[in-house]
Image (tube, rainbow, N blue to C red; front, side):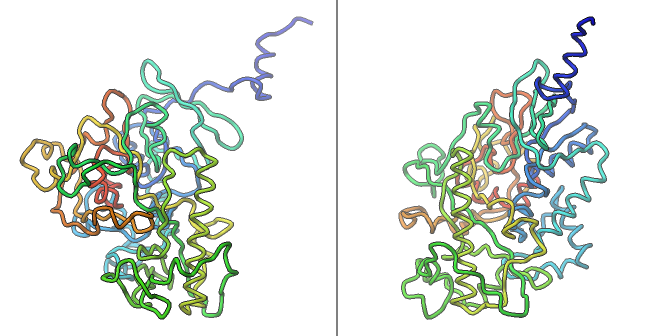
Length: 441
């Protein structure tokens, strides 16, 4: 029988012995279906670009949904772009603007699962937009006219080519892979000329939080005691008999004020409490995947310990992890809430001085979105937090952030979004908030 080389190669492809199939072609590929990645996907598709979003988990929305931070900060009267659309959809779902103010930390609060459904509905209306869930980037290379991307999905690899690539990962992992220069931690005041920056640069980042969403079951649902439970870590989360020496005595709230901070619709409670609560210090940015997994395990355990403290020590015995929010085995969110990431070196670097004195330069002419939230940094779980600048709600005026923060210098065809944009550490304390990140996308 004649040896048929073409047939032999086809068999190899079918059995997975060779890299399969020709590349699928898109105009834009976005790695990460978080807040900025979802917004970028929607907008690119609306502009006529055939767009693909590659998302590791099952949800869209990132920190707003997959991380459970469903209480937005700032931009309450600045309703621009995808942020404005999302808020309008929330109002339509819940029955009005006033209904969204269920807790006192925000004017816009919602159940994370509702946020995911809204983002998916918005995406489904765009014929140019494709989303691959449970997918991960496994390879990337530059081509003459764009990028070649390999994606692992459902036990197989798919190859994609695109003219433009957007890094919308939580920690700027695509930019790191491609060699884009970046900074981590606090910048020196001598470099940024920001009066409130520290005199010397350091690699200290903000605490992250593994959020929990609780609901009121109406009966005792106290969980088993978590591994390594230490009530002293949470004793001063609010005014109570266990608190002897609070880290921040000027920020002590009552037990009831603490729990209603993140009250959501339908008798649910977002637990994202910064005052000796479930904030957790770990720098995952340059860890290996295995190291990140262990860091996440420990952050989860810290949050479960805080939930147990709320139940066992403070008497919230009817509040337990919501069983109708996250489709995860442990009922916790898919991802932690990262307040900081790598910050790329972009064609411009946006500083606090550009916000407070915008007309000293010309960046205001290239503004593509707006923000108004104070500089807010979380550091109290870091061991040396008392020696760091106090950047809790440092006031700033409303500002327009410039286009150049998403463009890495010297990398044509690549844009960087989420919290990895080209801003200083100080500015990140405001630009990291959900409405701004949606607009960045």
